[in-house]
Structure formats: C-alpha cells, structure tokens
Image (cartoon, rainbow, N blue to C red; front, side, top):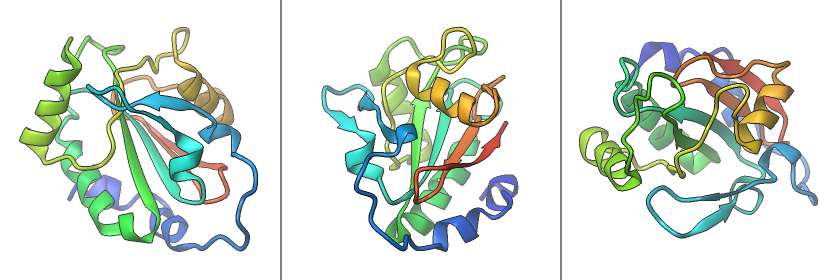
Amino acid sequence: MNRKLASLPGLAMVILMTTTQAQAQCASLLDHSVRQLAGEQVDRLCDTYQGQVVMVVNTASKCGFTPQFDGLEALYRKYKDRGFAVLGFPSADFGGQEFASEAESADFCRLTYGVQFPMYATTHAKKGKADPLFTGLAEAAGGDYPSWNFHKYIIDRNGKLVGSFG
C-alpha cells in the first residue's frame, strides 16, 4: 500500500466516525449527477454516498503517479464496509496523461491495477475549466484546485470537506 496515502492525517479517524443523525438534505459537495466511466448509468452522488466518507480523486492512466491506484484500491477495500468510498475521475488536464477512450481507461484501471472502486466519466479538474464537482471541492478547500493528477479531496459523513491533498 502507498504509505503516503495510508498516513493521510486523520483519514482513519474520519472513516471510523459515525453519523449521529441521518442527513435529510443532500450535502452540496455531493449534489452532482455523474456518469459511470465508459457506461451510460448516471449516479447522483447524494443518493449513493450521502453519510459516507468520500475521497474524490482526479486520476490519469499514463502518469508517474498512476501506481497510486494500488494504494487507493487498498484503502477502498479495507474501509468500504465501514462507509468509505474512493471515487475516481479520469482527467487529461495535466499533461494529457489519460486515454482518449473511456473504454481504454476503464480496462486499464481494472486490468492493470484491479480497480474496483467507482470510476466516473472523464472530466476536467483544472482551474479555469473544472467541472462543477471539482469547482465546488476546490472552492470548499479555499481555492485549492488540483495542480496535477491524483489530487485527493476528503468529504466527511456530514458532507463537509475535511481535506485536500495534492
């Protein structure tokens, strides 16, 4: 497992915390509908992940950081039954390091790294062209937009941003 990911400050504590009350309304950071990678199914993030700890990551298949998929998958497998999700969003914003075809991206993640965590449609994460999800995350992080691939945002069980890591 990638030691840097495993040691993100307080991540285990955030994952293990329980919600004291169910959220009746959708948290704004999760109030987005996104299409699954190389598919047609659209997930409303609120409906799927409300009340969970969520790590949103802009990924790239042809980047020097791509081996982080191993650590991300290990975190997902270890904590998914405790209400933790990793959500991957391929992006070619930084160095064009993503396949042009979503089918190629999906196959690469699954076959090369055994990725089982949810992967969503190729998107923009870079400041100035970020999609609404990444814009909202960056604004909640005080303007901390991804400056490269594999930037991580952590959303707690109450829908609040609690971390942003390049």
